[in-house]
Image 1 (cartoon, helix red, strand yellow):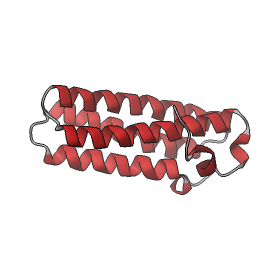
Image 2 (image 1 turned 90 degrees about the horizontal axis):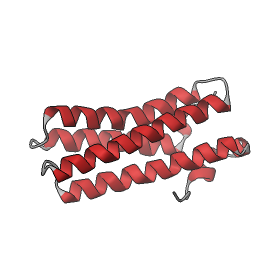
Image 3 (image 1 turned 180 degrees about the horizontal axis):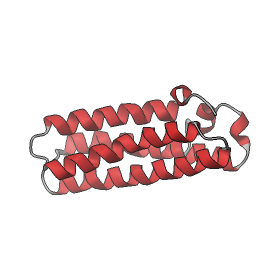
Length: 132
């Protein structure tokens, strides 16, 4: 068990959730259901990281990282849909999508570090520059 607040991936995911929520809240064109779905997907990413850090095993943390990855993919789709429906501007779409992809890359690195047994080293070093 570890403190999720010490993980760079959690910090980035938390910032992303705040950015998604505030951007969609001020973008009046976005339909309420889509706004809700995108916000929930964004919030699910840091939530699952935090929950995984509270589990007893590295395997459980890896499983929650997988769930967070799925939420990241879901968020990316909701952003794409909002843009393609003309409900989200390109500038906001590009910024939010880039942040989502960065968080997903870090999650892939976290998962890989856990599964390879290198989890003893600080997670942030293992995931800082992991490509997809």
